[in-house]
Image 1: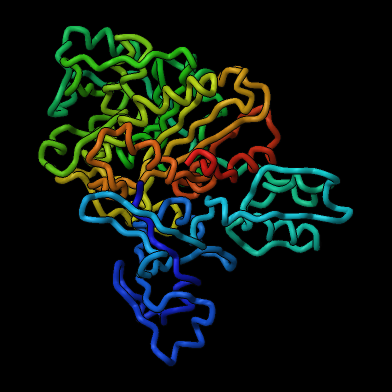
Image 2: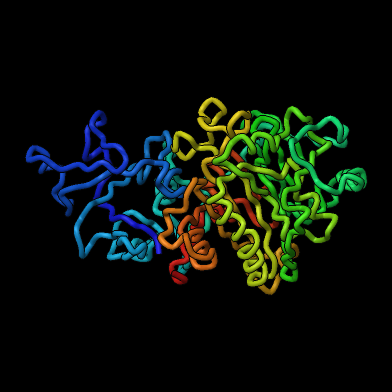
Length: 482
């Protein structure tokens, strides 16, 4: 169970003058002069929740454009039977919510389109209301103003399409480094015990594009801003490594239905290898994590899913390492070790793309370096605000993920990177009791992740681009499962 709070009503801008908006958790009572503002508001006291406490799929609606939905969320402090609270025993009691979570079944409606432009007797998968504005503009022959919909994602509703979306242009092309440095060039502050095997292990990094077809099933993600990054190939995964953020922008791997989860040997538990393809000045150091007692590190490709003992060493490369709070590692490790394997078994294999998100101003858009506020102590390694994961399979589960010639199925998540797990009331229990439900609560659209990372996914598929836009704007709600 999770701590939930009731949405009171409207946008903050309707309730508070800008200069008097309350801080997070602060109460606000309406005065008599404001009675006209709350004709349809059913609570007399509300408090605001900071953007950093809001689920990732809401953040992307707060964009700098004339037409947006859901900019602010106001939570009430109603007394029961409509409030949600946590008793001292640590148990959560949910007694109702309404009006703010677009994945809840009761928030969904029916759209009926009638007329010569709409297809006849056509039923389509669920979509969000924000996508309708562009359709209405197409019907009226108008050019849409900038908005938070994705123009072209509903082309499949129409007989003829007046707007044909095009794939965004890639802004930064990657480098493809080979082995350029010596083991002795690095002083990471940590190492692997198998020093006599390092030369042999480093030779494995000569792998070129032979893994691309296996791990980048839908093309290489495009970077839509100016930066510097490297493509790093490995037997079991592929990464787009940022020389600016000192960590991968994305890591992609494909797990078959038959894949086995293996344990990490004791001698590898503290193993971190230098990557001789990347300059020491663009590499993280374990020394920073030893100095920062509040921060640990995790890996974007899970060592548990390595295909062989030799390939497992690749998962311990410093270029696969990302900063993580110890509390968050419980969530991440369970997702990688248990849930990825579970989804691969259920869906006949999956492709997974994971990476960091930096959104310190919580506007739902990718942060530039000057906006980043937190670093691993004594280092230039920025701490992500979230981590994302995109899990893709064939919609027809009889086809394996890497041989799919039909429509795709996608589940995406934006996981807040926090120093505690207080969002879950039973986080003191075993991860099997709460992590999967927590992850599903943070479901998101691929489009949300694209806006938070300035990456563009699914650039090379057998499907039409409008169909891919439909896939990107789909929100897997899990409502039938919760």
